Length: 122
Length: 106
Image (cartoon, rainbow over all chains, first blue to last red; front, side):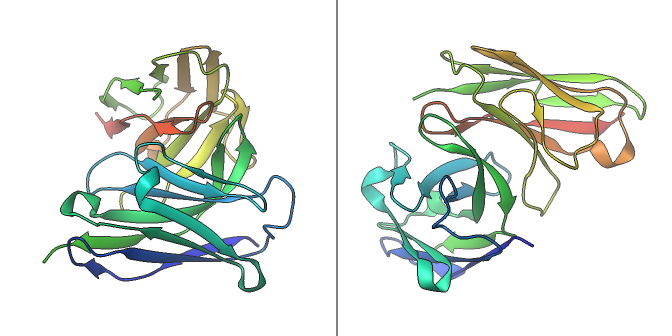
């Protein structure tokens, strides 16, 4: 059974750095073609892809690349996303998801976590 | 960046209706397109990937078609559980989601 769960702060101050952890089970990032991505959704708005990590590669949204870092802790089955210089527009539910089918650069997403709401406010 | 548009933004329909949602890409994405269903307060659920491949366990009343820049998701006979918001996602050049189509009960 594949599961993913996001964890991290629910409230972040403006200009702070957000660190989110995705803890997963039922698969391994050592498997070829398997990755974990981060997607966010501001309240009432559409989904936005942020970043994706495979065993040997990372991909970032071009518009947010300068603010994002995605890493993995393979031993603990975790993927960590950091986003710097947070602002009110970054208020959103942040999801992590396992990749389904890899395209030329990124992937569709199969299993999703429940999401975690992060609010940016002073 | 590849931009995605969806039409309509809202669709009112009745149980048993056949409905189609359209997704357009600002440039060709071949067939690198997925469709998701999302219900309030829940994570998205993948329905279709590679434009027309039905994800395992998804009812056969859902189908996808298209290539290049124009794609569609069709539900052949709406069921009560289908009223939700639907998103398309291109994964040809990085990834972009469409703005969503809310399917409402008429």
